[in-house]
Image (cartoon, rainbow, N blue to C red; front, side, top):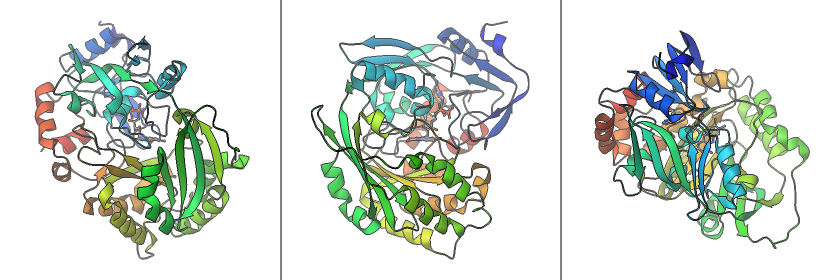
Length: 438
Ligand SMILES: Cc1cc2nc3c(=O)[nH]c(=O)nc-3n(C[C@H](O)[C@H](O)[C@H](O)COP(=O)(O)OP(=O)(O)OC[C@H]3O[C@@H](n4cnc5c(N)ncnc54)[C@H](O)[C@@H]3O)c2cc1C
């Protein structure tokens, strides 16, 4: 028996973080070193790899063999001269950032979650609140290829921009090297603002501030605007904290939305209550990007969709989106907040920002078990597709191959590379086959 199959279990059920995706599997292999990973990939004909199971899309299981990389999580190397950190792909973002910060460095754009694995984050084009997708800061990918061999991809390799967002279809990330930057301090101010005001000021915000995020609150006519400026250690200000009960926002939201699948229109009342309770206080604080802006703990699960659209189309889209969500003739009542964030253009083939600067807009259902009854997901998707928007790979959407063919200029190139690197379709599950095979 090979080392990796020692851990294998017989028929069992794999369940995602929010319990909305379930798959039976035959063989679960928990790897803790590269040899086990190579062995598992070489000796199985159909497999998916999973990290911490946070994705809402059906992308991590659904094959007879599953490889769990969450124990493959060591910090491999810190290079003080080049400011590079090499980590195993199962390491959590939390662990990596704690290591990076201890060196006085940062990865200058971070998502609003720290419990995800590095492999899961990179594979799905996980992006920061501002700046770029996380993959932008990777200088080297060490991967286990479909035949179980090892290959390294650096900035010199023409394929690296395909590897940066791979959905686990081109191979398995083994070790990742991040190029870090000096850490910095952000001075953050948070306050509610009328929709008409924050949308009118958006260009100015993005030119003036180093950090911009809008927690948009449909049915309240407001967004909660979070603006940050890089400041030095000597900068002083008067700290303003939100009331202590603010930390219960997610739990209270879940309670208020508990029956909105039965009574969708109650959502607009719940949103107003949540606005008055949790989004009216002005706050002022400072810290590193990680300390000041990333959520460390969540009291409840959720189901997520997220869409991106060209920055140049955002204002028109926003008017349509707001009108649709507040139109009482449909049932697309959306839970708050809708997270509005901003990404710069990059070169990764399957990045949301592959061609232009984009705005990302989150759509959350706080009652995960009832996500199938949440009409907002479908209606929001309709509006975004009308504007050429792209869905987040890790989140819920219904778009298909024919939509993606139009949305991504490198779509066919990715397909050709996928067939070359995975000629037997080892890394495809049913969901990904529908998306990636014509
Ligand atoms: C509460 C919450 C907040 C979030 N916030 C953000 C955010 O701010 N910005 C953002 O962009 N996204 C965000 N996400 C999405 C999240 O970053 C992705 O779902 C991410 O993939 C989760 O990582 P994971 O370790 O759970 O990966 P999983 O969900 O376990 O896996 C995701 C994908 O990665 C593949 N994969 C995992 N490891 C490897 C590997 N070693 N090699 C190759 N492929 C691999 C899997 O096969 C699967 O296809 C959020 C999600 C949640 C639930």
